[in-house]
Length: 98
Image (cartoon, rainbow, N blue to C red; front, top):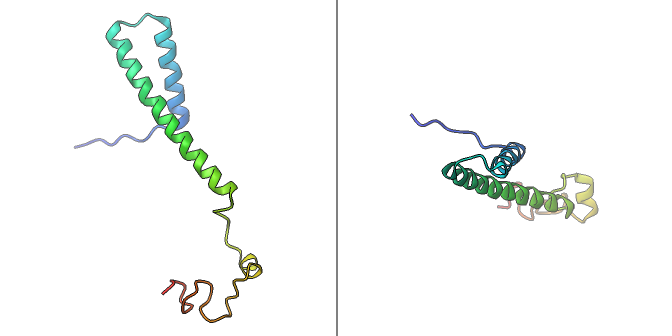
């Protein structure tokens, strides 16, 4: 049976990365262990950069207004009159653009 591991949070990865750096800086680990720690640290650093890039992208989307909550009043002000033929989706008013 395969055991699934959960994805570590950014904070958990960062904490582990700090522990790895401390262990490597101490110089007390044997060479093989130091190499293994270094590889693990690289993997955590890469994952953290990916998580940060994803968060940055999400923030940019919200800041640029691409993901604003739908408000019927703002739709009407923007010229989207649902009473017109075709409705808000420009189709037959079924809401699916068909």
